[in-house]
Image (tube, rainbow, N blue to C red):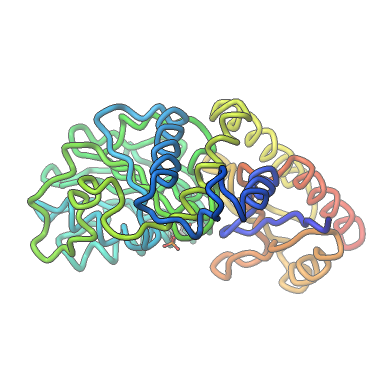
Length: 360
Ligand code: PMP
């Protein structure tokens, strides 16, 4: 049927079973005689869709009762602004800058208050995560911000910072639901869904009750206030209804796969296939520091721009798509999210071995 192995960083591969189910339900969702795309977001069937999606997400991530789950729009980027606007009461926040996404979030927060970069790994092109134990956090910070998996540089935190009573905010866009996580360690867990969960257009924000407050920065637009969205159960205005429906299908798929513990094992196995190959290769080299490697995004290079370009150009004939690296790192990047089958990673490694034999 012409499906390729799609290594795109996002929007990215979705489970084939989910796409088939969405296709089967396209003209008639559950006997309603209409597509979810055509359905009022105030209708009973849609209420069932969003409530079930939330319940399944709560079950998958074991989200404690004192956290709200919001399905919003505006991408993770809108949260770069919404987080400081909603949380900056002392107007101080600490940012760990470990890549382009935390850097962007930091820059945005500076528009609203005293955002402080407390550690950065820009000195080595973000190829590692700063040592969280060496950081001195501001005692008066409203929150500490991290991007737990940096999509472009392929790093993830091997250890979380201990921020005491200061809420820790984490952007998990590129590792959402790839493994279990202890939500109770965070004030906010959020991310765009277009990498590991669903189609672009939905941002999931999981926010602790005490951070949903009326005393936000005064110019915060109503739509960006967590209070507004919590009161309206994410239906303050028309939500990205079809996207939420697909996320719900993915949550069911994840439960069928055995939940997040099973996903973690599968993801670690896939990542090991690729990293093991990279670590013994005479041609290809992984760019991120070994201790801080992501199991979702794997950037690698040959060391020659010409060979990198040739590898990318010839990938298509091996059924491999979107393997070109981000311009900040160059070379290649394989994003191996939940829905990437092991066979896809094996096909990539087989192609790499063939290429190495021809060009090393
Ligand atoms: N954070 C991370 C970690 C990302 O990878 C991305 C997108 N690639 C963003 C934030 C920005 O997300 P969006 O495009 O949904 O605003």
